[in-house]
Image (cartoon, rainbow, N blue to C red; front, top):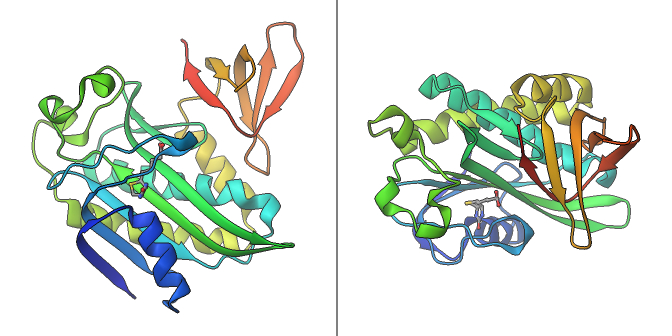
Length: 244
Ligand code: BTN
């Protein structure tokens, strides 16, 4: 298996995509000590200081149809959360679609980037960012309230390398299930690990926002919510805030 490690890259996602184009095999992993242009979801920046956190991307050539692309992210977050729980014993939970939380604060996120051509996913990059040994002092003011790290919870340093190994092992297992179309197994596990289901949520779209209860996810990974007027809606994109 190819695991390529860098001191510094703009973004491990962009690097993984380049390597795939150069002919590296599906499953290639890119890890960097720091990123100069770490990317988050919804066009945000992922704060990526050196020496502390895990920035890792997996380059893939999935065979699933594009309509199940969201499931690739859910599969990845299931793998990461399972690995994190096993490795740290911390009750990490998932917030839809792909945030990893401790005590409602974010410790990790996943950014999946896809190249779709016609009815096929030509290439996919799953980018995983985990705040491992970052302390509150390391965090810029704007994320202190909403972010945490494994170290903040455990009060000790953890090995980024060992954590990466656990995640890769777990990823391989869940990715195989996805490729074998075992969608229900993945969704059931996601629901088990989820801190979103049953909660009141606020969902912010570009043009509106709604208050609702998160009920479940469907087989394409969309979040099914019940609005306060009793109607249901399926959400495939948007920013979710947990209320209570
Ligand atoms: C999110 O917004 O929650 C997703 C964050 C994903 C960050 C990771 S860090 C490794 C990989 N490279 C990037 O540029 N982003 C992802």
